[in-house]
Length: 258
Image (cartoon, rainbow, N blue to C red; front, side, top):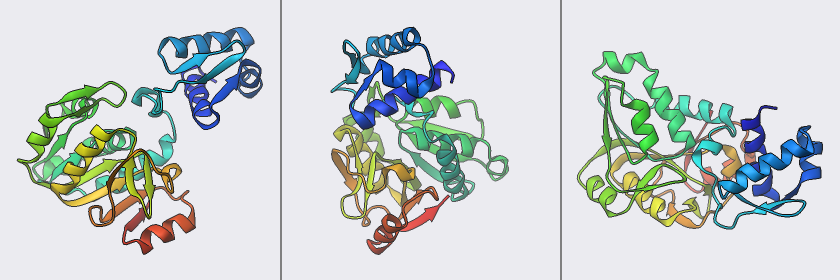
């Protein structure tokens, strides 16, 4: 296993268990004890975990992995979701994209659509600086970036400047990434500032769509974004639990499976 993939796997394991040991990681990933200790030291230097004598424990402030690590998780599912989302976009549309790894995959899928350029292009409004940079070189895509303060973990701009710009625009469709999606709790995120921006972006759209892989279904994060009254559609992957999908549809969501 390559080092980048191993670091991602360590963080993923730590997020689920809260604690790991060097011996456990050696057995699981096949790296030497010395290499495993260096991996843990590297992640500790980035404040993504706290080292212990025999391993590491989860860092309290690192409740959400930085996007550069999360982008390697469930890649196939996110790309499939992105293809379904991109198929909902037609030329001349104004498209809202929140931050997140799934919406970043949607940006890549939109950039690959040659028919959008033939039809006159699209406008993308985003508060994610990585998405803006990804699309900046495409002459057929007009990119509008909100102002705001950058969130170092997600590359999202948050705060009153974002909301000020969003109040003045109308979107045809908005794709919103979330940390949790539940039939009762609705769409939720870990950060209240991101939730406020996501909610306003969804409110400014004629059609608001939640995009999330199936691992987040049934989960609830810290802050509510909105329910079926705000989000008409959910796009997730076909690995989703059937009971969870039935509950979401019963709650009023149109669920599209990628």
